[in-house]
Length: 269
Image 1: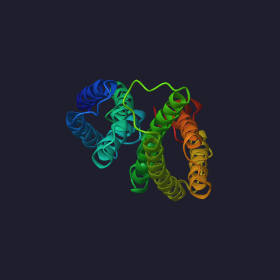
Image 2 (image 1 turned 135 degrees about the horizontal axis):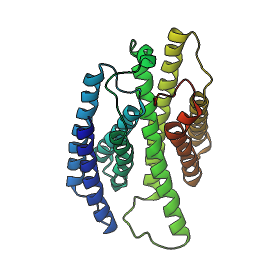
Image 3 (image 1 turned 60 degrees about the vertical axis):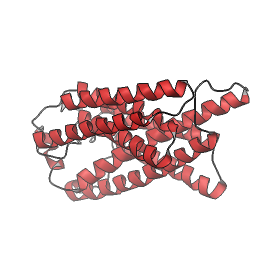
């Protein structure tokens, strides 16, 4: 698994560097950026499949596995959107895939599943729950990227300082932010509902009251109100970009911070 992840990181890094060089010259990234990214995700997929075979279970329990899949989701979003949207905004996206994938390659990944994780292996509900939650986080990371680029460009325009890089327009950033936010919200809703059903069947309770559950529901409410007011009150632009950045802080806290507070959802051991 680790070797395949390292190769994937090399491919993603190469693709990112080529894209960055072209963006700095205010040119659109060449097709080689997409092709190299596709090669990277092939090796990345191979790493996930290898891990699945190695442990004999759905590989989305330990922290290394979660980060590995998160990186895969971001890279997949890059490839899918590059084909459909043809926007060079996504030249920045692979950088966000490199980070969790690199961390996943560095973290220990024991071949034997600890006994306390055995209850997570005997149902399809848990894989659905975990997959949807990580897909949602990946989409919210893309929302964050689009929001940051929107805020930066708006600041440059107000100061009448043209950007030194080739960047997508404000409307493009806003549209991509809303699109990825919507995808993330649907995935998060499915993840939360499937988690409720699975928890009820296995433990007799819908919620365990741990910090990750509380913060996940907070994130759901945040994006629910943002989408609601965009539809009903026309919220867009800088306001939604700022909320996207706030939502991203919560996502980071779930992925890297809450393991130190303990609780039912801490799978890093």
